[in-house]
Length: 136
View 1 (tube, helix red, strand yellow):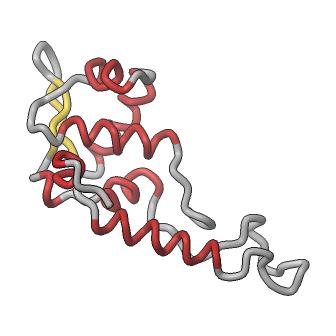
View 2 (view 1 turned 30 degrees about the horizontal axis):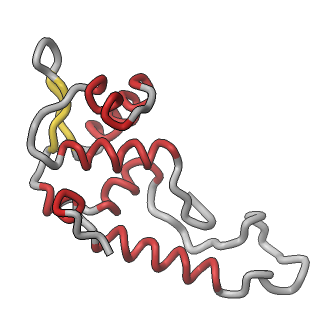
């Protein structure tokens, strides 16, 4: 991903679904989708990517579903974000341009600072924090 960090629908589904799984129980895509009122198909697609990245495991069949691959305290929101979007680059131009027509960004260093603060929050917040309601 390049540019300003954004929270896509896929990242939002991953955060919310993984937050539900932090309780320790296995849940199907259907159960998670109903809990957060989203498309089951889209959520299932996002979770297949999380399986591939090793953040969750899946069990097929009756009683199957997804569960966390590791302790909620060991999984940061940054792990989840980068599994879906990749590592943000420090390219803050909204136009993704090499050269600004104004000689410098019209936002100055604001977009970079906002992105850095957002990334720092993701790195310092785990699924366990979400489970306990301890977000800053």
